[in-house]
Amino acid sequence: MGKEDTFLSSFQSIISNLLSPHCYDELVLKQHFFDLACNKMLLSKILGYGILVGSLLVKFPQIVKIHWNKSGVGVSVLAETIMLAAIFGSMAYGYTSEFPLSAYGDSYCLYIQTILVILLVLYYQRKYLAAVTYLGLFFFP
Image (cartoon, rainbow, N blue to C red):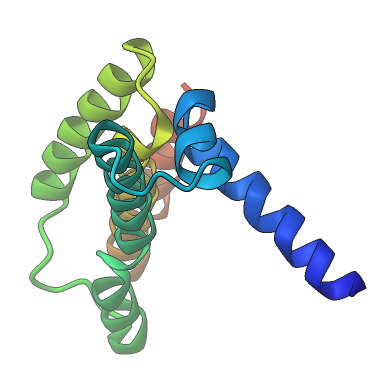
């Protein structure tokens, strides 16, 4: 019984963080599964966090390929920098607008991955000073 109670309390904790108190009462406690507003909110939150988790893998194949080939040939540092500025704009807007993390959290993952791509390209081009400069500018402003 101990494991079932722990699982149930963990599940309830996760669900209560995804839902408003009203929707938690409706969907979990009262089991009114046809409350349209609450189902829309739950679906929106699940999709948002799904996109957040999926964004962890967006640039992963590119990072692995650059690392395996020990070369960033064909990757434009300028284009990646422009992409970085766009990602930062999205990230800053979501943060300052106080949106939930599920709405803009993928920007953080893409930001870090894009910086990693730039750093790898510069490293394999032996432009160490430029790599350190990028690191300083984009992580420690």
